[in-house]
Length: 321
Ligand code: UDP
Image (cartoon, rainbow, N blue to C red):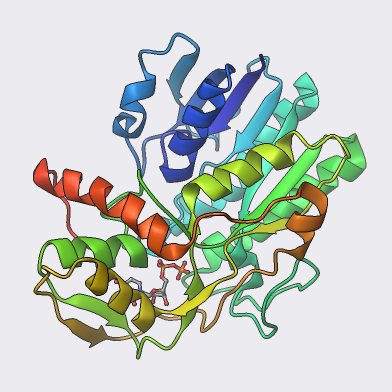
């Protein structure tokens, strides 16, 4: 049994990861500033004596004697990370420094939740880990993209300078239960819109592509990466390489909810919206023996009931555009 710190532990990925780690018998310390999430995602975990939540913003230092750190804290959807972009950069950069400092002091192994956004609007397709990316340094997505890139820099500098035991995973689009219904991601928006018989909002002409990974596949690769004893630092891509246009996704959601009266409408494409994104997961297969097991239709089937329940409970659920 290990003592494991999860920053951003009440977020979408964090809450699913905390559950998995508790199921494995570990002690889990969850840090969150509750900026874009709440205790509700971990409600069922709170009765577990091995689970503890501390309200804390990782832009401030933190001390605890832990064996492993999963550094997940950061708003991840464009509408949320753009609300206070300076704080987003601080979370990425100061947060990484604080957590790396803790790893250095305690000897803990530390995993960084990086992102496909480090590739920006990529010129190569699919993206593998050796591609350096094409990122706008001063656009509205830069606080997140450049923040996450700088966090990777810090991880490798602590590794080279202080021998901190690091791991980096670059997460591509992921969906599943515990997603924040109001954070404007495409999967949550389309499902909520279809369930509420509202217009399905495609930005641009819907020809841009994404590949969608189900949350359980992501949690599996993160745990494998953390526990890999061959000293494999990454960065390693994690995502589902099956690529869909956004229009295909909208059609799929409508096909899976045939009772929906929603119609597709087209809205303006946001600035710096990447045209194409697809992970090359060769490295994860080779080093971790991992590949995704849940394809889009199966994953959507597991996700729709979660949003349906939220809507039925009459929580404030509204696709945000
Ligand atoms: N998108 C859309 N309608 C929505 C929300 C998003 O067409 O209601 C598009 C968005 O412009 C982008 C893609 O879906 O091209 C994925 O958006 P998301 O914010 O989920 O992820 P990211 O852009 O970070 O990949």
